Image (tube, rainbow, N blue to C red; front, side, top):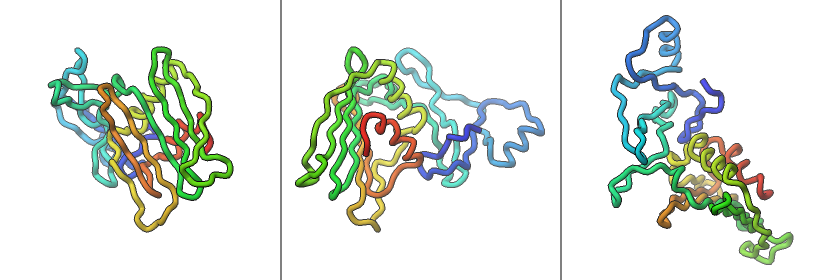
Length: 215
């Protein structure tokens, strides 16, 4: 098992990998099944056409704690156009906002362009009069390789397409609020946010953006 694999819903590392098809049964396989490292997914593999390629859409993992499946490919059905799409192919922008009422907010916006993407950072002034007062930093150009790496991390490592839409700890007042907004082709958006509560592996997720700003 990969050590970094964690359930995107509850954060548990106690997960099992699905094994599809007709496995060659052995004592080693039996031990992995009995210990919760492997679970059988059945003999039938279902796929859909995504840009001319057949993509299997079954989950890759099952969480032994919350009993939820995860690790599905980042694809979705576009009803309007009657076709399947891959999120990684159509992301055009990423906006990450984090902060609080007293300290102000840091906002990092990454927009795709022909050369790769531009990164724009807005941060609170050193001594802000109010939390809405920002100072803008000069835009930074990143390569297409860097842009693709960021997008793939969001979907292949953190399974952002399987996140809850909102995470909140109602027992905490003020504190830290955050929001991630993904812009897709056609001005479509996917938004995830929270108040004093976070998806699993949050510290590792934040490192994507801490490369561009301190917060």
